[in-house]
Length: 388
Image (cartoon, rainbow, N blue to C red; front, side, top):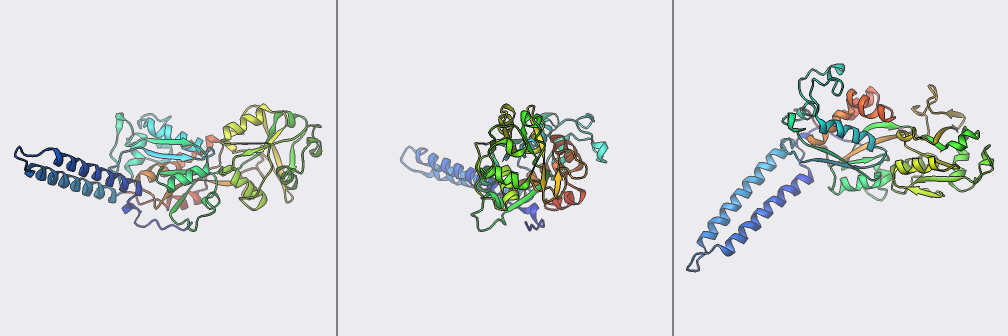
């Protein structure tokens, strides 16, 4: 997505504008209410006029102050930064939120190893990253603002950020695939924070019975209902339980798009699950299941990854040459944190932390996702507003 970062520090978010307008309206209503009851004993209304005028002046000054603060980058806005959406992106965002909200001091080198990343600071963790965008340090009282993470799926994430319900929409699918009926996507800013290899997994009993890999054609046959027994794939004489994610899930959207070349392709599955966590549990609890899954959940007890042979190349989990981090792996996909109509300083502070080497090592890699290359890190950081 083309995005011009110039001038983003002057961006006024719709959320902030609505909040400011709402405060002004409430003040004006209060003034009108006061005027209707605070009358002189002889029936005059001179006192109410003065009160209403004073309230209106104060409301105007409040609006001007809020607007000036927002136009300077929004660094005076210390309300919580709200994100939500994809269960695939959730482990990254949630880990980042736990670190941010804890705001541990620079002396805690195990939790905030700034020196290992050539960051020379005596500030607490969140204070440092927020300070790059003009926020005052919170110190022992907590971070300059809280960072919250909701859990649903990608379609909900991009819709809520578009509708102003969230600041950041987490998605494991491209917004073009999640919202295919839109005429334009220019108002979305796509911040890629990591890469998911999306492995194929089976119930442990199936792996133990000797099913180690399938082909791309067999994968298509499974999800079209053409292959229904494990004996057809070299396994036991047992019915295949094909599982998947719900429609609107970025994991499903990416999988269907990568396998069939069409994000809206119909597939045939026994059950669909709203979150990766529940899907992983369902595979583990069965003795005949297969599914695609976000890489972060591959260590769930009771399931096992299998290899995929695609167009002559076999891709296997933890294979150094043709592993799931290979650029050619057909089921890989970017992990996104979308913002709407630019990126505010508050949004940039958190996203910049995740994009840094510290963030990639702390929030992305430990959750079994692949870190961005130095080139991609630079590309993504170029979308952020200038630091103050």
